[in-house]
Image (cartoon, rainbow, N blue to C red; front, side, top):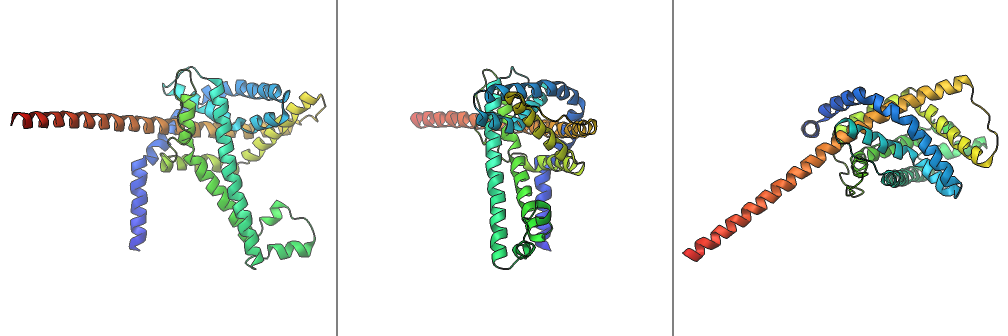
Length: 314
């Protein structure tokens, strides 16, 4: 019981130190007040993504697919730059820095996520071999190829998938400040930050924002609608490149996708604002620490010089 009390006390102290409630309220207020800014940017951003995909696809389908897949991270960086402009940190953007930043963080998060799900699959396989789950036996008895929904009925398999998903989300949360740093430095005459600068900074403060936004996205079904929109946009882009026809969407499908994408955009901007505010706090904290270290070093040098003079006079 004492250990639990100590743990809860440590969590409470950490939340206070990270400013959990403060960042949650500040980011929601800033995001609500400035949401219109990002909504104005979104149509131009989508047009730019499709245009660049077509241009890259005319040369290489492989690189076009990579760029299109990473466009979600590019959109996140653009959202962060919109948030920076809203809080008075605007600077002229550098599009190439934003594009390469989006590709780098998409690749990093994708690799880590694949490793997590591969590890989850290996654990399920090992557990099935040792008789810890009856999943393999059920598949062999049915003689049918399993679907993902049927696999998720197995508690052990579902626990592994949810565990990998949660870890992937936590890794995303830890990457928010580094992405904000890249978004801030993706400007003319600004030195770039390291890939992992600020990794895990303000983690506890950012976590409630990530949980709330992801929760809303998945509970409302917005994630499924957004995935279908992205898939259709991808097929439509390559249908245009190949000069082939694509079945048009129905009115209900368009409405569902529009509402789902709207929810995703609003949630993403809230995350972007929270990340921008967390970056500014972390950057200012680092600058104060450097200034304090410089003053301490200067004072030490003065003290050492005064000590030498006293010894010479003595």
